[in-house]
Length: 204
Length: 271
Image (cartoon, rainbow over all chains, first blue to last red; front, side, top):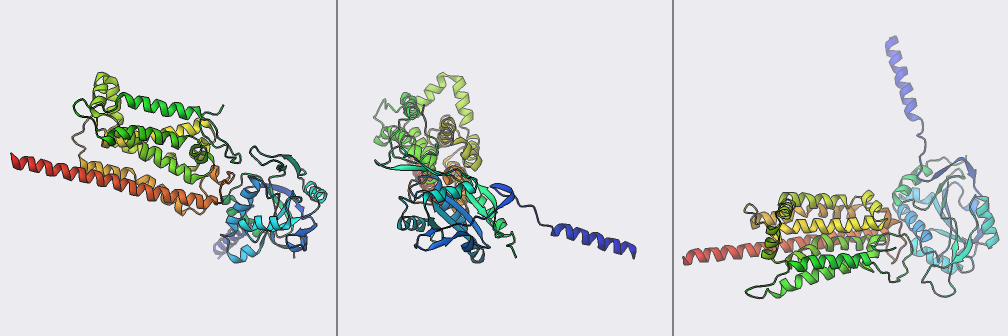
C-alpha cells in the first residue's frame, strides 16, 4: 500500500514538474525586467487619433519606427513580419497588432504611408506625429532619435535618407515591452517567437 | 577592391560596377579551351562545334558579370539559381563540346601525370559523386550564407559549380580516356541519376514554408517580389529548366545511340 502511495506521489510530482511553463527563449534581445507600454497618441492614416495603449491593449504588439522611402530595413522588417502573420491561424492573427510609426512625417503623408503599407499588409497600422514627439517617444523606449542623413548613391536630387533605429519592439499581451528584435531577424524566427509572445497572459 | 560579385547588403542602385576577376576568369577559361579547339585536319568541324566554345565562354561571362552576377550574389535567389543552372549545366557542356577530342587526347598523352589525374577525376563514379556532393553542399543555407558574404567565398561557389559541372559532363561529351564499360545506355542513366540531387533541392525550395537563405531574405528588395516567391521561382527554375534540359540531353544521347546501332546493323548486313 505504502509503495503504491509512494509511486502515486512520485507520479504527481513528475506531472507537476512537467506543467511548469518552459522559460521563453526569443530570437531577439529579451528585456529583464520588462518595461511598460508607453501611452502616446498619434494620428493614424485615416486621420483619426490613434491611442497606442488603448488600441493595442491585451495584444501582442510589434512597434517599429521607420519611413516609406527606406531602401532596405523598413520594407524588409515589415514584409517578413507580414509573411509570418499570414501563416498564423485567424484567432492568433487577431491578437497581434503591428504599428509603424513614421520617422519622416514630412514626406510620409497619410496617403503615402497607407499606400506603402497596403503593398505589404493592409492590417499594419501606420501612424504619424510631430517629429519632436516621435523622437521623445523613441528616447523613452531607449532608442536613438531619428535624423536626416545623405541619400544613398544614385538617388534623385533633393532626396535624403533618415537614420533610425532598425529594431522591432515586441510588447506582450500584459502590456510589457519584453523583446527587442534587431535587423537580421528572419521569418522563421518570427514564426517561432510570435506564438511564444502570444502565450504571455494578459493582465486580469 | 571589388573583383568578384558578392552579397554586399546595400540597396541596389543599378550603377554599373567593374568585376575584373570575372573578365580574367572568362578569358582564362576561353584561352585554355582555345588550345584544344577543333581544328579539323581533314574536314572543317561542323558549325555547332565551332560555335559551342565561344558560346560557352560568352555565357560564362554574362552569368558572372554585372548585372546578373551581383543580383544573383546578393539580391535574388531566383537569379542565383539561374546562375547555378548556367554554370553547372549549360556552360560546361558547351565548353566541352567545343573541344577537339583528338587534340585533348594528344595533349594528355604528352603529360602522363596530367593524364592520370584527368582519368581519375573524370571516372564516371567519381564525377557523379563529386557533382552530387557539390550540388548538395553548395545549396546548404549555412554554406550559401557564409560564402556569398565575401568575394572569395562567392568566387569559390561559382568555381565549384563550374568545375563539378565540367567533371560531370566530361565522361559523356569528351570521353577521353575512352571507357569501354561506360556505353551510351550507362551514360543516359548517369545523366539521370547525376541530376537527381538538384531536382530534390528544387522541390525543397519550392515547398519550404520560409525563405531558406538569410542572404536573400534580408537583402534589400530590388523588385516587388517577396523573399518566398523569389525562392519558389528559384525552385521552379531548377525543377522546370533542369529536368527539361537533362531529359533533352538524354534524348539526344538516345537517338545518337540508336542511330549508331542502325549504322552498325547496316554495316553488318552489308558485310
